[in-house]
Length: 226
Image (cartoon, rainbow, N blue to C red; front, side):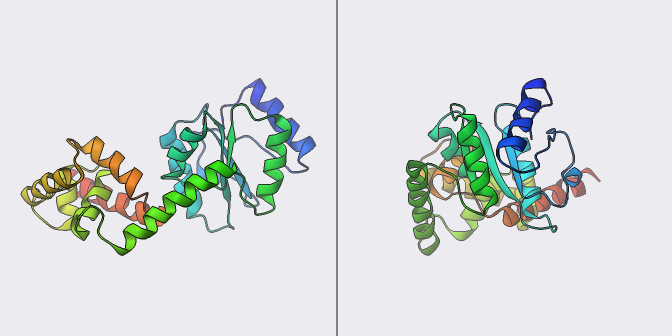
């Protein structure tokens, strides 16, 4: 998935010739149902696709019924950039800006075979990240209650206090009280800092759960507009 231009067309031709597979171009504006049913791998070009669109495609692909589709990111700036993206997207592969075309094709072949394609150092980073997630699932995170964890998860979707209150069937005042306690426990001063803390320390909920949360927030928003 990238913008249609002469460079991307040449890149697709190279993949078709070197990786012995059929590659096609999709625009970030194309609907997910425009993909062929036989699609096995989607490459998201981080250079030309906003992260919000990458996340949207990733979530919709995770719910696709016509076979499992692997997702990988192209043109990542560096390992830190990749680690940030992997904190809220479940990717099978990562390619960097300075990767050669031969390396890209080698990785694509491995991904199509069902393997992961990441550097050892990045894999080590992910193992440590998920180890922390596993530990947090068995003990309270910085003393946060289950309700506070739900609220901090909803913060990550961009929900307002009113939407969070409607979703959890509590008053807006109760939400504000919870936010005050959350900020105090994790030593942050605003919603953005709280979301960044949650990504670093708790990780992202599974895509299906995130979709449910977003649908719930949207339903609350639609109800309020009516």
